[in-house]
Image (cartoon, rainbow, N blue to C red; front, side, top):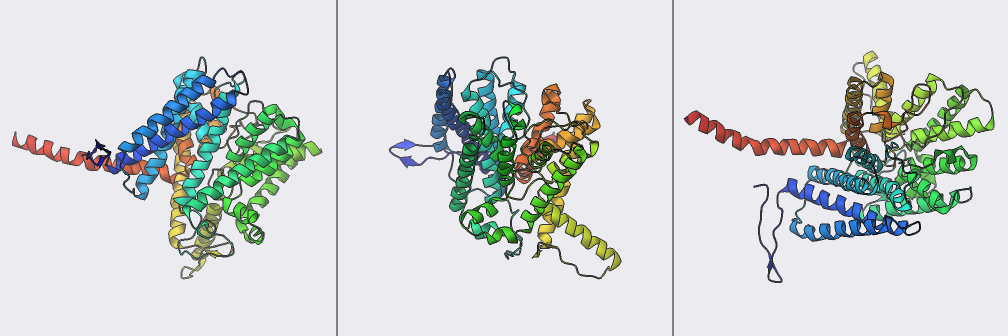
Length: 506
């Protein structure tokens, strides 16, 4: 039975539990997602009091009801320990129900917004994708804060999932090396990992917010931009603020930090500066930023200081997958567009807030390519894969190759769907890459921004699976769907046998 009901006696009451693992995972994810959206709504209602307060009552009622109902229903779910595949299903379900709950909130609060637009806006927020279809210019502070802080919640949850569940920061031999610090060394306990990452997010947001106050921005706008930068969500109401050179410089520092691994940041915060010099991945990350900045400045052909600042800002915004919008150069070449697509695809360091393929995996693939070329010349040669002085186990190499295949396949499938629906080839490819890497904005070959509002409803919805998969680093979403499909087949098999037996008797 999918639902297994049994009673336990406590205070002379009987409590029924959901006991099927697949439903436990989905139910826990549902309650977590809805309650998280509810708590965010309560906080947004309090923020709305600093403005007109027109949406305060709705936020507080909606958020309170959501959290109270979820807290009550939690007693009906068994506390059974789940397997890793079931935990992935729980995380994926949590994201989906959080998106659906926010969709309902947008539909009720914002006038003339249909369900499809509200769903896409909610998905873009929680997946930290710098795409938007709703105009928030006339909205109150509460709804704008909710939209912006949704990015931080999605980024924080995804990063915790990566640190605690997905093996992307350590080699399978379990041996730490000077070239790369493992998460087990820095966060040996899960509780410490949660506290440390929360502290990193909190301190980074506060520091960036108060730094932006030095410019012409007020506290509320500074906070919103800081939340968007730290979460790599890239949502802002007015992109004109990025034309200010002081704002650009402060945000560049914030985005570089956001694209850096939380392991490196925590080691630096605890006074272990030597880890910076030993991190070959960090050196590669900074080298990519410097190289891209130089190329963009060279292709801009303006030759002034503002061009250097703008090139630096665009390069960091792309590789960190933050996606802050800024106007292109007067002389924008096709090469610049492809360079930005490459930066977005590669992405920042592993275990950072950004999306993308990420630098460590790319370096492993390059080492595999070199090894295969050596084997063509020397078939009997035994060549170990080394990245930054670290020997990478063959199991880890296999995982990266599979990840590359899945990553490329999702881009190809999403771009194919968009092309069939009538989108141009370059625009379809750019859209699918930006969706999977949770980046943005979508640029044409001439550098101009393509608004997602110009896409049809079907084209927008085609981007949502890629956005969700990219935010959860592919594995949880794919394993969740694979697990559900496998369990569905096992559930249907006995019925097929019974039907086949009945038909054979007849």
